[in-house]
Image (cartoon, rainbow, N blue to C red; front, side, top):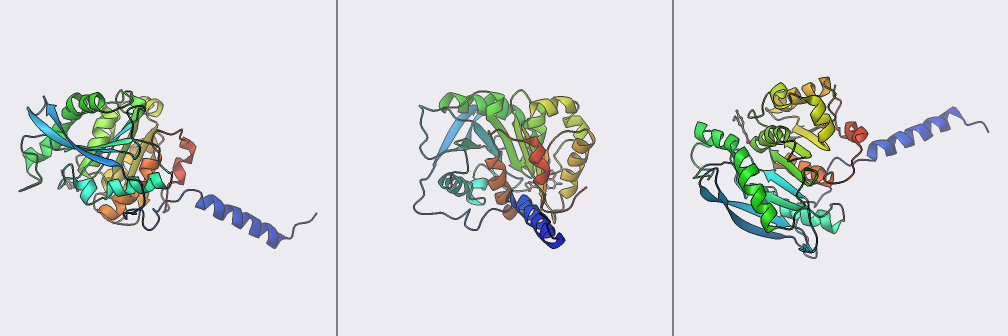
Length: 293
Ligand code: FER
């Protein structure tokens, strides 16, 4: 049979189109809107003793609909930005609504999500000069609080799978920098790491990734995303370039938008669906909305 060139062209075009459509990179309309009839996850406010800071500290914990101690769950630790606290992702990012809707659509495996306060100091409220050097230092001090105080508390009080493969760390802006610094610096604790619009607290790539081979072998997912109109884009770009030079598989997702929750909600929607599943790293380059090099 002879296929006419025009027909061949149409067949190729159609298959290219469906290939490009395979991964949806924009959350559907309504993904962050409360749906009355959907089962809801539960939000707990917990108080944990922090030896790092020397006080009891607050974190929020989301357990999925049908949470049961008969089952065990992986955990995502989700970090806020410089002006935020343990409620930022919930109040401004509608995180619990996004998760409830993902569960209703059967798009997310059952996970627990912990929303810490990433400013590890006695008065950890986002008040006054949020760029104050002591407050910025507290974001770096949070590493010890997270690893030594919060994670053990969560693993004692929730029905959690206690291994690196079952822990993810992600965050926005300051929280993105923290996630890259702490996640890559504690590969024995985390196998899934995401930085959304990471801030200048992100360590120099060669310092946070001194051993690219180890990251290659150990991380199941390294996600770096940023809005194209975000002034902090060079931070993500530099990290991406180092990873690329060193052949470390990662998702580098550039998307329309600035330094705000339109971008971060979309990131959470996409990133969370990739967690704790068998990922094919050869698919990572498909996470792009724009040409990049
Ligand atoms: C900076 C610019 C932005 C910085 C932090 C940020 C520590 C954080 C922004 C955010 O969390 O939204 O120079 O330095």
